[in-house]
Each structure stands twice: as structure tokens, then as C-alpha cells.
Image (cartoon, rainbow, N blue to C red; front, top):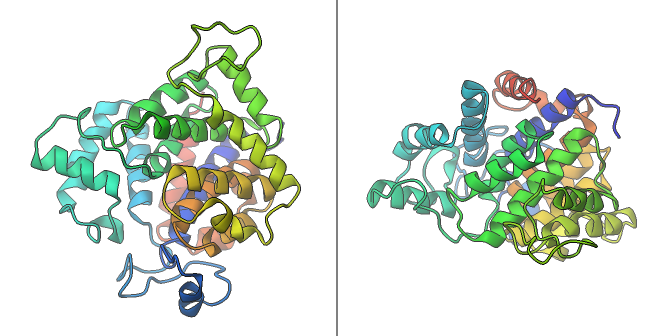
Amino acid sequence: MSSISTKSRAMGAIMGAYIGDALGLGPHWYYNLDEQRRDYGDWIDGYTTPQKDRYHGGMQAGQASQSGIILSLLIDTLLSDGCYQESHFCDRLDTDLFPLLDGTPANGPGGFTSQSIREAWAKRTQQNLPWGQVAGYTDNTEAAERTLALAVLYAKQPKQLATTIASNTRLTQCDETINAMTVAYGAVLGMLIQGHKLDEELSGKLMALVADHELPFHAMTIPGSLASEVGTFASPDALITPSCIAQAAKEDLIQPAWKVSIVYGMPCAVYHQFPACYYLASRYSNDFESAVLHAINGGGQNMARAMLTGSLVGAQVGFEGIPSRFIDDLDNASELVKRAEALADLIK
């Protein structure tokens, strides 16, 4: 177990997410790495200003995308209530975000609105459907990027972590495989905040929580489990994956590490993003800078890759383990640090 305090690890997880999000603002969605290197050089090593004719054009280096903004909306809801009250979060989306959108991608706070948010906006504001009926089948990591706040708050309460993440994910994404993988990511983050390592042993610990009915996954792979113990999610594979990938990271099988984007895939879907994040967060468990920069330099959906990797590694190194330059050059840094600290203080 880590000697770093829970508070520091929680703050590291939140600030790691904010940093990864902002790092991706400039070089977001370059699927041709030659073009990325033409615009940003052979190695991106910090915050960059987006090209005027690309995603997030007109924004400045170090600012948050819409993913970071929505993360803040959820955290502020948690701070206001002291716990997760879903209706209050939905109210914030209705009043603080949706009026600023028009249903098109290149619009809204942060310079771009993801498909799952656009679909929810359309059903909520154009069709007047109630929350609970606006989710779509988008397979991106949009829900994971906000629900990592729930993984932080309920890091020591795995059942509550799983319940709240699953419920919040279903606000915008209705595919239960996406939900299972999102909950699994949150469960991994929660374990890291407790002080466990992202290593070959972590999946066994997660499966032990399944056996204890703390995580709602299928238990049939556990000796002595009953056929009726199927859980909410049919397969435990999303919990088994992290340790398999940690073994690959231990052996440095991907060289250089930024090529995780090529091995696991550059697109936005969770089945491309989560494996790459687990690999980088395991390989660079004590090196925040290397983890997030390899995530960024791989191109494609590098913003989500860096945001989710940054949270996992931030939880391992703690707030003090994040190089100060990433904090100093972040837009509204003092406000973000205060938000992260306040959330960490709520952990029970």
C-alpha cells in the first residue's frame, strides 16, 4: 500500500484529469501523426494553443475543454450536497450547460461538444424528454471523464462507487457494455486512491470485491460462486483487463510507449481508450510527466487518453508528485486546486 495520504492521492486524481484535458486542447484528434508533428513538433511537452481551423480553435493553451468543464459541474454538485444527488447534477446540466449548446459539434463551452452530450441535449431540449430517457449508444469515454469524480468521492465505498457511476453514466450512454467498462475504470481509480497499485494483483482484488457483492459484476469465474450470482454486468472482463495490461507494461512490450495509440487504437471508443490508459498508468506509475506526455503524443483521441491516464497516475503519485509546471501553467489553477482539495476532504 502507498504511504501517500488519501487526500493527496484524491487531489492528484482530480488535478491529473484537469491537466490531461488541457494538454489535449491543442493537438486534439490528429489521426495523421505527421500532421500533428508538423503543427506541434516531434514531441509535445506542455500546453499548446489549438490551430485556428481545428477543434477548439480560438481557445488558449492551458484552458479546459468541455470535458473539464463538465467534470467541474459534477464536482461542484458534490461539494454543494456533500454527496451525489443525481437530480441536482441534471439541474446543473439543464441550467449551466445545455443553454450554451446548439446541437452542433464545434460549439459550446470548451470549443467542442461530444456526440453523447449532443444527443442528450437534443432529446432533452428539442424533444422535451425527461432525464432517464435521453441516453444514446455512443461508445466514447465521455461519462468516464466526469464520473471519475464519483470514483474519488466514493473511493472507500466500492458499492456506492459502482452504483453512482453506473447511474450517472446512464444519463448519456445506454449501452451496458460501455457502462460496465466505465464502472470498472472508476473501480480501478478508487483502488489507486486507497493506495493499491495498478499491477498484476489488482484485478484479483477487484474480483474479491465482486465475491463480496461490493461490485456488481458476474461472479461465475470465482470458485464457489453460484449460477445466480450474475450481477448487474454480465461479464467481469472489464475488471480482469487492467492486470493483464499491467503485465505488458511491466515488460515494456510497447516501444516507445506513445505507440499505445497504435496498438490499442486511436479512436474515441472506451475499448480503445481504457487499455491504453491502463498501460501508461501502470508503466509510469511513479512518473506523471511521462505518462501524460506519451498519452498526448500518440495522437487520435489523445485528450481523453491523457485525461484518464492523468487521473490514474495522479492517484498513484499524489498531488505533490505532479510536476509544478503542469499546475502553474493551467488556466484557473488555484480554483481547480481548491475544488480538488474540497472534494478530497469529503472522502469518508
